[in-house]
Length: 130
Image: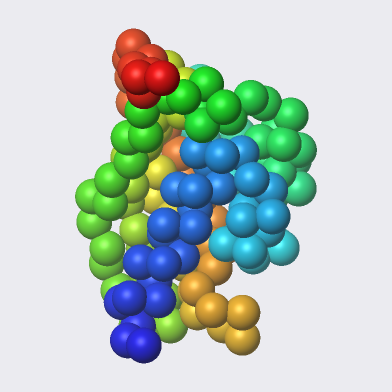
């Protein structure tokens, strides 16, 4: 399997983890030492992956609400065969986020070592027909 295909699978795993609030998938795609960063409030907010995991586990998933899934890869920038920065946009409930995900390829495949996220906007939640 080529490097890009494997990275795309890791990105898809990230999207699945967020859409389904699936912490097992989150554990698989994030390196255990990863941290998340945000500066939307004018100060730098840092969250270790363990805290983010607890937050994701405690919230209702967009899938459980039958929310129409909206996620996209905006950009993949390879720094080397073993590292890449990926820009994605996704909607979770009414929040539309833009994330910059730093991936490294190690013994466990491509994993996110850091995430910088930004709340881009709020949008209506569209649900799938029953």
